[in-house]
Image 1 (cartoon, rainbow, N blue to C red):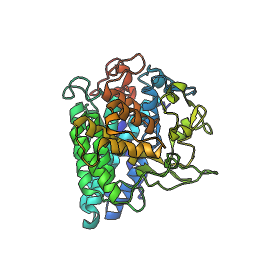
Image 2 (image 1 turned 45 degrees about the horizontal axis):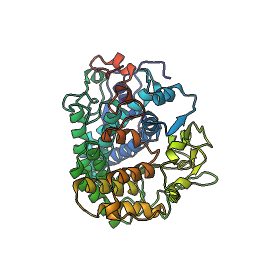
Image 3 (image 1 turned 180 degrees about the vertical axis):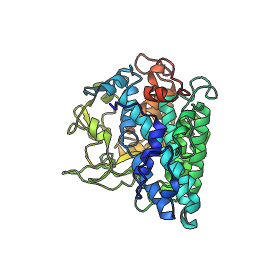
Image 4 (image 1 turned 90 degrees about the vertical axis):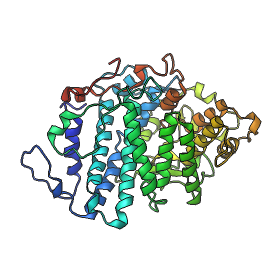
Length: 451
């Protein structure tokens, strides 16, 4: 645990520039001169690339954010045997305000935000040929991070009035002055969602359709993330439109489900970097020299192996479901590759979301709900459903099995208003506290209910 009480935004102002390629003046100062860092288009593009590295920090999209959501949302389908007290608190739904993992996730999220705020503040330096792409990718990162922060540190959209409930602070300009840090207040949940939607909508218009390196965000990823936001709001009409756009673009650009479920989570012996699969819409890259996969750290029996899967989860499978073969006893094999990419958006999720939205709305935009569900089931070697057999519960079960232990459970439980064990879906214990060190450093921040 860090011993010094650090205000997040002060740290951001310092960290963002430490990774740049120009040496900073080391004399004491209360501000940072960004003109010493950003002078050319290449400087801004380089900073954007650095933003992806920070987005993939182990405490955020490197996996810890999602492992925490899995543990917090668990209703007895997994067990935690690890020695990290911070995750023990999360799994037990008894989180302390000084929980280091909770604090580090907050810090990592705002560090990534400050990264892209600096990029967006210097778009005038970017060449016309690159400007839209740079802006779109920066806004994809910012919108995605704000969405995931507000889901973890604030009440769910459907829990009371999002126009009144406190969300997380919106910071849309670079933090360069130390005095900036004392002014930040929490925006409402509705304001944070509106910012995420605005950023991701801009990203759908400005990101490119394809990325030959499979590293950076495309407009396909932006549409898919936008669909997640609308889905969390229970805005099924807009979620459907965004997801259908994502699927259409994905299929036009050659994305398809892998031949088997196991192939969607490739491994190597010995561990080695493996590029994205044909269904990876967006993934954080992990190699021998960069990146980290915290799913591997906690789920793999070849690493810490702190998380085991309980029999109650296996009871959900149909007998012939090939997805259950991606387990070795009580361990999932999804994350066995030490250098495995962290798969944030897979094509299978898109089909499942479109199916659910179409079913709820009684529509068939892009495909009939049964056809999308059968696309996922066929890959799992399961018999097709007939349209008359399909129910919302069956769609949601397919979602739970397909996306298991990838960080979806907590947020789906809140959206669907399902109890988590003995706790109601809107229990304050299912929300991260605002880190105590931030409260100490910034008197304008207020704490969540129950802490």
